[in-house]
Length: 159
Image 1 (cartoon, helix red, strand yellow):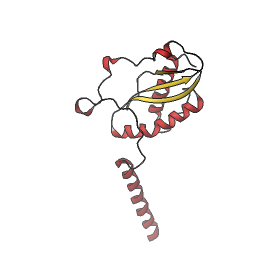
Image 2: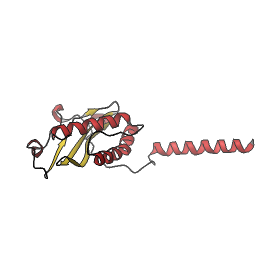
Image 3: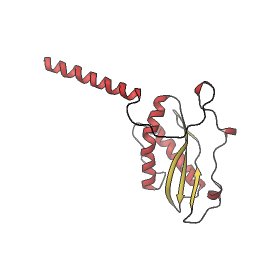
Image 4: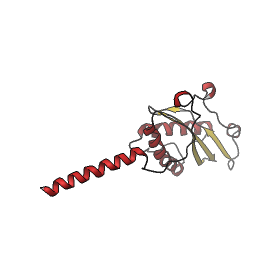
């Protein structure tokens, strides 16, 4: 019985250390995401004029099949913040995805988004669509990401 107690205590200490390390920031290297300028009290400032980013001129013109076109999707709120995604396509194939706007409610949401967004990007680039499965544990972020992707694809007239 003494051994069982020892293993239980050492397991609890190891688990606590792992959780503490995660919250302190030792979980993963941060991913560089564009951050909006911070306003009063450290909160992100609002978009100028409150408007949604629009498609680039080349996207509105339709472009040739081989020409790369980009559009920024709608800003989507998701309970823990808001995000917007820019999509670049060549023909009907998605060639690049970036997140120019990511505002989160607290540091944990920021850290979670930085871990999840590269996974979502990989999935979008693999399926060339907004029809992605998402990431377990980040359902709201995944849904907002997919909605913004679809908004950008709609602006580009890509299915």
